Length: 379
Image 1 (cartoon, rainbow, N blue to C red):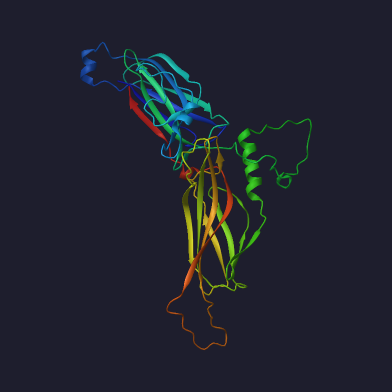
Image 2: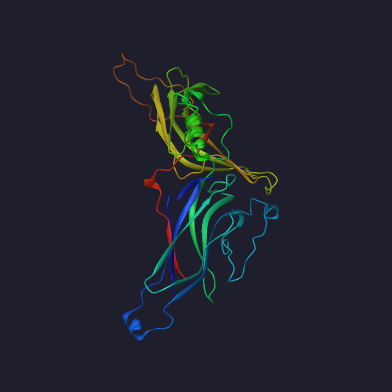
């Protein structure tokens, strides 16, 4: 009996083009003293080979998507027998990405109580889609470690991880204002930046730009509110901050609700029928504002959601969905000279909605919310 354990060394969330490293340990349990005293001849365990590979599975909702068209563009993955290395075997969906399998060891012998560790390191392809769990499409990543003892079937150990895509960053978004003004010595060659470091600088430039935008929101009776959003590009984990100004409104607003929503658009070539984009809520801010002159919006963006991305099959967009509850008739509020005032017992109200597109981008996930990923099995 041999126990195989796999542990991700640098977290569980990675960018495309970033290297993922996994420590794989094979251990042979110590034999009981009785078996040692009897001198068992089969005390040494033989492992024929251990291999590792990254793969991405795509699963679809066949009620919404033409499965034949999707599968028609997918190459079949070879290897289905008990002794071959088929990393996506028994996984839901079809494989859209496979890295080249790496043989880590061959013909390894372990004595009782002995263990051996090996490192598997692989870069995630730059054109990979992000990890995503939508209504119609799901993308899931795993490292699959295959191992086989002599004359035994292959065992597969799967380690899930998350991928954030950097391939959809806008080009030419670098901002010279953020560059450090340091002397340039042509005789000194500094360390070259990695593609991930360059992408991180680009993300900082895109999301740090503050250009307040003002929106006058009206209905059929007049102006409801003036809304200010300080920027339209955000990273995961940031707060969406804005202000509401009711001071010059001639329509009474009693309540506001702002929801961070995703829009899942399926490409028309694969869409079954004429389904509308799937809308999913991620976070919500609601407030009663009757009598307010000003208030503000502070809506945190969760770390676990998927930023904007686009593939041949699906496009994910984000928006702020506003819901306003307004009074049909104007209300009179107390002034400084009012001695007493009583709020109305009931109000005749009507709702109105408004959508504001925004852009969400990846970010480095803090270590304290990234669990240590480890899995083990017996081969």
